[in-house]
Image (cartoon, rainbow, N blue to C red; front, side):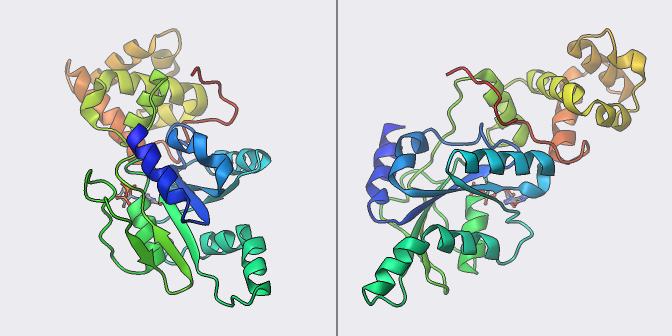
Length: 275
Ligand code: GDP
């Protein structure tokens, strides 16, 4: 992590603003700890990407909570939004003082320099591609490839610098690991599927019980007075998977990812995490 931190720190010197991309379903768990140390040094926008998959109410709550901390935040659906106009406007407005200062000194077309950072799979390449307006080779996910600064140019005055190397998430709380596994941000083999599915069912029962009941056609007797492990066994049976609990677990995980329970956000603002 130190190497990545040093590389980010190095590149910070040459940018005006940092675009930190997170998964809107996990606005806390998908943040990279490297940022914590550098946040105060630069203008900074948190991009809650994949907003099309997240609970809209919680996305608004998260944006508000970041804004109350003094950090600009915006929701983005980079998969379906072709131009990312709101994001580009926010970048300009965050830098309006600096742009005005340069204009006063005679610089008319101040070229904004922004660095994009994010853990793998949050949609960084998709955002860079959309901003640049064409398919660009993004090398962030290949260790060792991004040795040199790799500037991408837009035709509207924003130059973009990709994250150097891979920035991994910090999994100091097992709950964070489960959430990352559920979202597909980390490889499926890292956590046993039944652990991830039980975590998901626990969370869904607590927050979206009616959706769980309707997706699996459950009765009250299936969910009340049962442990979540027992519920997974019941689901295995109901789905016709005999005693293949892992298959049922994988099905639950895929159902979460495929929006069978609707748009769900797994991090809640103000939730307590032990460091
Ligand atoms: P990176 O590892 O951060 O560069 O992530 P990618 O840009 O490669 O995206 C990872 C996956 O998420 C791909 O399958 C993208 O199509 C998908 N993706 C990216 N942005 C969005 C989004 O806003 N909404 C949805 N639904 N999927 C997205």
